Length: 127
Image (cartoon, rainbow, N blue to C red; front, side, top):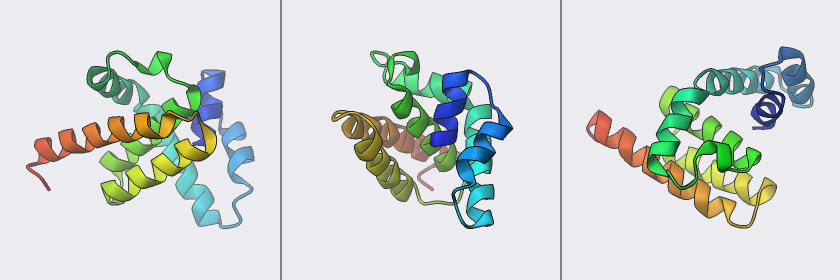
């Protein structure tokens, strides 16, 4: 989330910035996983943002706090590209929102990600 936030703030994916952020993780596998997730979410941010805007037109990504936007992008990417159970992804995103964002952010993030999860289930026949 921190890598995405930095990239979003700077308007570009800077590998050096990302590596400086993730180097504090002691495990190289965690570092690699974090960089992979951030890169994937960054590359898919336009598609993710379109989905979010369709589901919450009153709060499009451009109006969201940067932390919320980063949390949502990362979580949506993980729900659609990783093997992590969606409920785990949503719970982790809610916890990040509680810790790093506004008082209302956890509820907002939960609502968006729950809608994305339901939409994903409908598209995959409930798998």
